[in-house]
Length: 235
Image 1 (spheres, helix red, strand yellow):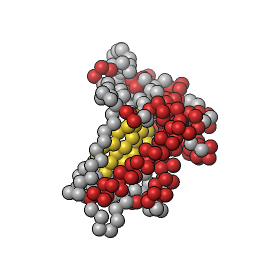
Image 2 (cartoon, helix red, strand yellow):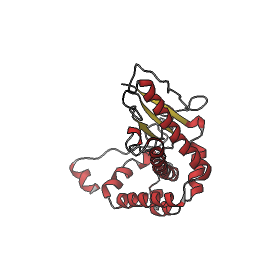
Image 3 (tube, rainbow, N blue to C red):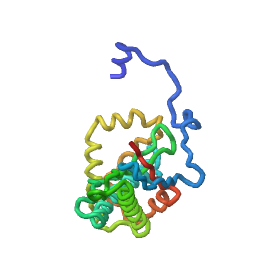
Image 4 (cartoon, helix red, strand yellow):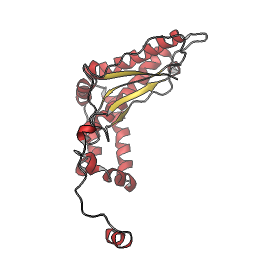
């Protein structure tokens, strides 16, 4: 195929390979002094709807093992947060719907990876509630989620929750590994993004062998108070 393309369409002249170090100094996202903790949860009755993005620092695309750990961690935070929010707000979870944490790796910008989710500003609002009441309810929701993170960092998930996460993530791995287009997309940028293709194998075994201690450790290392963020998303 390469020979055919070269003969019919032309080919690039020999050149240096694109490496992850290219312009690395211009693509580095450094953490601010004291971490990235932003506390911006002031109730303001004049703004009835204030969404909030919350999360903590993650990793870069080339850190395959760590990214897998953070994906499992995001799944487990979501699972436990759903249960806790139902306890706090009732079956409708205060209007949140399904909150879902995701692990987004840093790709072009080194150090920009994060694990996070967003909460809508109408959470917990009662009939006739003003903006301050809504913001207070939203603070309760955010506090509940951080308590989930703290508990998982201290004790790790239950074996039952970890088994559910493992099954879901193994299913995703099997879907990925059976899709040649997915492999093509990853391999097309693996060199410049610092991803070792050989490390991408073995995802199924990795998730099947996870332990509660693995989850607790990664949270202690990445979700401490100085690594968390809360950002208001205003209209």
